[in-house]
Length: 258
Image (cartoon, rainbow, N blue to C red; front, side):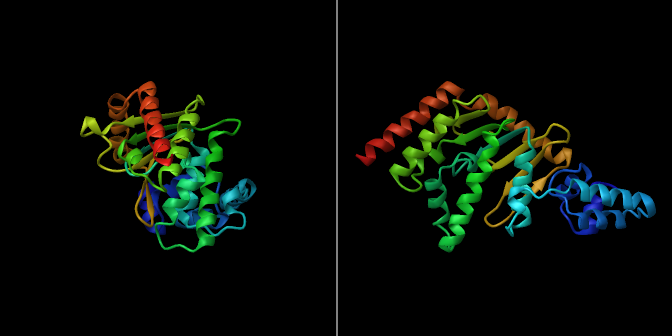
């Protein structure tokens, strides 16, 4: 039985099956039991695998005292395990580089209670810890220039936000490449996505819609995104040129606050 067939039988996403197959953090014993039932694993072998699942089960920070949607939990889990994350963004700046004020401005644009907004901001800030931990994740961000033009939160918020991105790129594990409007089309225009690459498992892609998200992990489905990233590497402004573009927008927004 393939991972896709197993996921269909259980009513799960393929990404969830993949996380269980590779014993990644966040696995629930009940999920392992359900999978073993479908696969008709019985007796001592079943007991052994269930015990192993229980032994490695350690709640992560996002699982303690929180009731997060499954897709968000899966996203945070992928971020925490990734070796490299490539974020291709068109309309807003990458979540892993957002300031609290910028995130708040985005959250306030939808109908959310103040408490929920603060909780979401806190979670997003905690997610950013993967970039500064002892073994930091590598982040490659490809940012369409339209995200720099859109003054989310106003000039003061944008100036602070863009200064933070420039500062973040001083770190060896973080890069931010701008896709200038002047270039017209580029390989990322078909839509925002995040590519996760891992040390011991195949890459997956996360695509987010207005109120949900989905993982893509079948190799044939992921390959077009890998191809797009390769093209973006050639199409985007280089690191120095991108830094100049970012600093130019910082200066523009700072002038608007005077």
